Image (cartoon, rainbow, N blue to C red; front, side, top):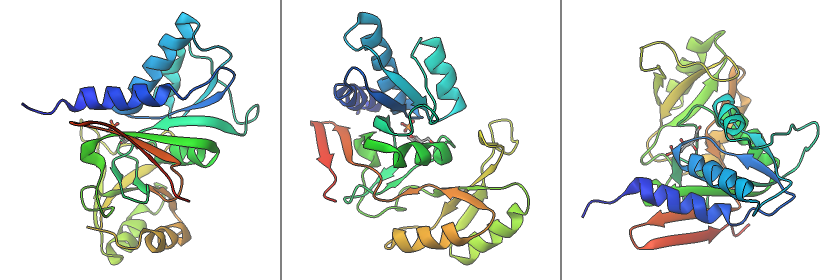
Length: 232
Ligand code: 5RP
């Protein structure tokens, strides 16, 4: 029997949605897995099981989706602290460090994550790996001005660097008007060290290594759900 990853994503996201309480400020993640949580939240609001929820989206696409689903939105000006965020990830290691940004929303996702009391990451079992970088390149958001220079810097750090393109072959542009370069470093034994190197480089806006930001991960696999909580 072939694994049904869509069903796994749905189950992980719906489980995470059970932790939302009335009156909370909720961060809405980007990606196909987080989408299931947004749909579930909309259902719970429609049925009245949840009330007085306000949400902060992690992308313009999610903002539009939330409006279509009549999910009330708020801003950081009104609510600088988020009670609970449900978001996806591309790769998760045993310390719950993540690679994110497959959907290109890593900058807003990281702002939302760092403002969240609970950052619940929902994944299917294919996303879990022992060492970050084993299965996924690190997306890096760069300013268009001088991006070739950042490309060469990232190459000098050992990455195979690819400018992200849209399906029509045009450069992918983020919600901030920046570019994404996907950086294949191979397995990254010291992600904190790499993160510091990337943060020091002018022209790099943000990167997809999310270290010590997830408070918990809900992973759905062929044998059921696993709820893993951060030790630190
Ligand atoms: C978007 C992200 C997504 O959460 C990540 O790419 C996972 O996506 P999916 O749930 O579709 O596999 O980081 O920037």
